[in-house]
Length: 111
Length: 119
Image 1 (cartoon, rainbow over the protein chains, first blue to last red):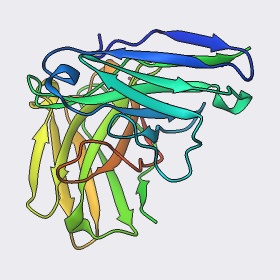
Image 2: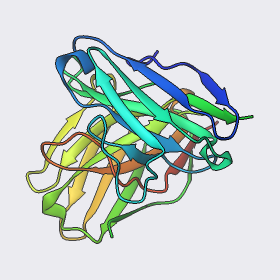
Image 3: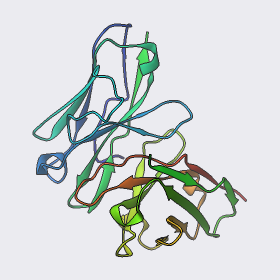
């Protein structure tokens, strides 16, 4: 059971906008620790997609955006493309566990 | 460009140990941390621990404290993760990933090492 809660799956047609939520608690996201997002394509390792809540590493399209409020964070993908079909994970730090925590992951399907 | 290259796949028997290596290039070792994260089949990532090579300080997740040893060799820019008393449920892909002091995101990640525990 993951410390951060994500929906198991979301789907959308090409061009649509989808959002993925990540809900934590007062010992992680609610304690003002940053949230980061990773994309994992089939058969590959996770790749950093959003860092420190809303920042994109070089090379990540601006279709991807992140936000954080209270004990939750969200990843939005606008203008959904077939290549966005992947698993997405949120990650933060937890002061009770004294380590990094991940969400269980959300599978994005492009219809 | 920072790159992490891990050792190859392993098959181990229950009760034995496995040691996975992670060699860094394109970065000075004294400016980073190395985390180890595992991912069991169909599961999300699970953070196991990290090491700050320049101080040789390791911090392990409570779940793994009795079984995991994380070390680093600054001269070869290689980090190691050893997991002992292997169980069937330790079957997973093990990743190393770079962190930095004062930030808590991980980038980049190694290619992953599949560890299979089987009798």
